[in-house]
Picture 1: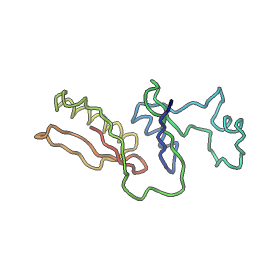
Picture 2: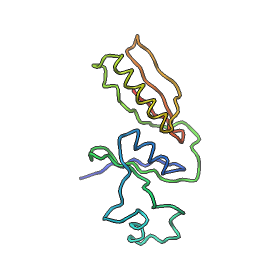
Picture 3: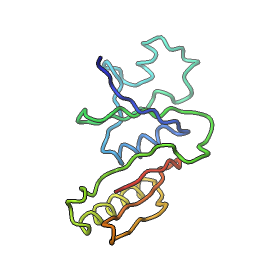
Picture 4: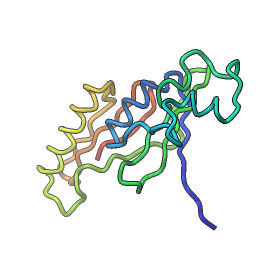
Length: 151
């Protein structure tokens, strides 16, 4: 059986999440299928009634894709309620290169990624700087408060 994986993330502002996570993961906003100019045009061609599309829906992508085609599609599903509790899962952005890479190099890679993602709207929750254990990592939150780690 063929299967494709899609990760669906509930959020209040899909466009903000698309911009942030495309930057964080090296993904791109997903273009509308079948040569349609916008997602709204695609949904209209599929027969979705205009009344079922919120204002602005479909004008910009609500999903991101790996430009190399290896990673899963990520869809940011708009929901009315805010996030209220800790995630039950999270992304680990493994940018350091693993334990075969010297700790000072891994630390610089993590710091550079943290700076880039803070500029894109993330918040640092804590830095795990444990040189005796050979670890440097950052616990962070995306613009809507979802936790993730940079290691």
